[in-house]
Length: 459
Image (spheres, rainbow, N blue to C red):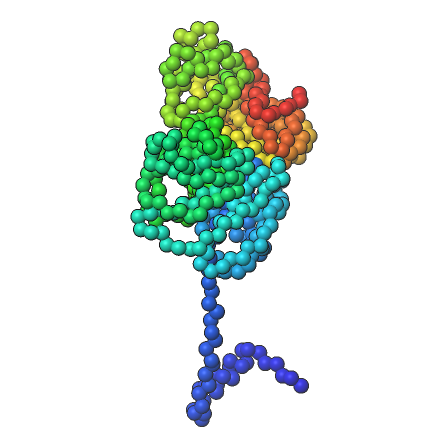
């Protein structure tokens, strides 16, 4: 009969034997050779312009969470092995869906960049894998690698020059089609300008302006779809060993729209930077002007009565606009109380194929704090608010909502008495929707809404 002893018993016996004064024999345990663990670096970049946030797992274990569009993980050190990589889309209903799968064999002293690119709506989302040997960068140089990751853009020429160099008489630094990547290139540390043109054409469709490439820094630069402001088809996502930098075209400016949300004010004209010519003419309560593009930076906004521009309800109010951003600027308050001011906030304008995006805006001067309900029907008796205790001049930001039919109801905080709504709405995948709660025209005891973007409402 085979006897089985516990490890504890064996080690106890060994200890007793080794300590015995009657035994001169010394028992030693042979050294166990420690396995050598080797490592590689891996980086993940989200370049799918209509895809939601994603989680990334390796062999079922979490590697990265909440990776949004135009984000890079930075370089992560992992043991060499073959990994089953899954990319899981985070859906608006709280579930996840595996959208990409790949086996990645990671070898010693290699650097891997996995880029999720393409479009969900076109059913061509995929992983592009780029492998490079790890190597030191020559002193005084920077290392650059470029990937064309914009599916709607064809063959392009890329110029990397000293700032303000005339490209009309020079050859491009490289040419690339969608999914092409360059080799790793070393360039001297200096200021550069990156410009992109259609192949064989000198018309610049992207201009980085002056950028500095620092010594012994590793740059992985992806040309990704522009989902921000401006007319350029691309932006540059610069992935660094830690994090990323986004470069918008220098002429992208800022997109702004103006909303007249003062219920007791007449139609107005809107003037920018002291101009005598209105940027927006005759905007009435409840109306909004479509996005217009203006240069980024500090600007002044003056709002005057359309019937008499000498009557200025907002005078030279300052707004600071950032390159690549989109903003809504609401005139809010009360003419009767001589209390009208501009309220500006950034908008999310990227469309996501798996969800609707909803922004709820509290612009009702007479209402106190409110709760907002988003429910399948008008019955909110047993429902919990989607937003609670929302004050005047607060916006929800871009909420991820599962596509479907809903009812929007707004109540005074802590009550079930509906002050605005119930408003039946249909929210579609890839849709952008905004609803602003405002006072009713010339009646501060009642409330109304301004619907914007793709909103389709049934009253």
